[in-house]
Amino acid sequence: MPRLEIDSTPFDLDTPHGRARAHVSEVSRPRAAMILGHGAGGGIAATDLVAARASALAQGLSVALVEQPYRVAGRRSPAPARQLDAAWVAIVTALLADPFRRLEPIVGGRSAGARVACRTAEGVGALGVLCLAFPLRPPRRPGTPEAESRLAELEAVRVPMLVVQGSRDPFGIPPPAPIRMVSTVQGDHSLRSDGEGVGRAVSDWLRDLLRD
Image (cartoon, rainbow, N blue to C red; front, side, top):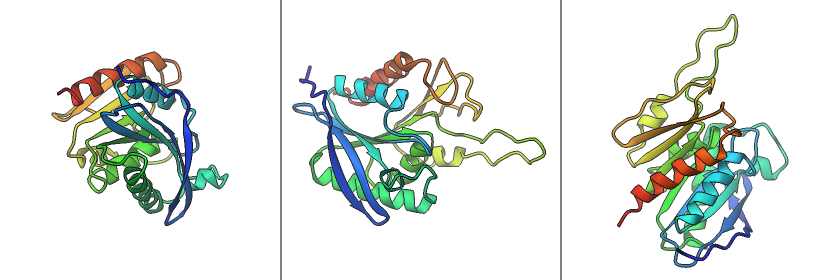
């Protein structure tokens, strides 16, 4: 088992839409890199992100938890999708130049961060995609029509994918597909109540994905 470096090192990264920050945890002789983004109004301390990070480190991956530029600037309201995507591509590209040089990337995130990872997976050459609490369809508000499903963003991904979803998620649960595994754990969209379940699902998926 690779030696774990528990502490993370912050890297400030320039993007077309401001400065981002990656909190990097490295292992000796890493098998791959995992790069994860946060939800729309949250940060990198979310229970599911922390659980996924721990599982990835235990499986011998170096990990970066990434703060988008709007969060680094102190704003809670997310930037438009095109800005999030452009910033994410710049972030992943920079990390793959250093400190994750020569490592294949597994990308992902929670909620809105998972959507960004799906939309940009091909462009960054992702080995796999991890979606935590993918917001499949926004809950319907009284007096409004049903929102459009975002399943197309998942369907566009052409590499192995894991979706970890709370059993009571009001955004719904995506269907599995030949290259898309869906793991349901206790809880709602926050995935706060079953961090251990999230960690087990991520560990099992990574073990299969990286099997020699």
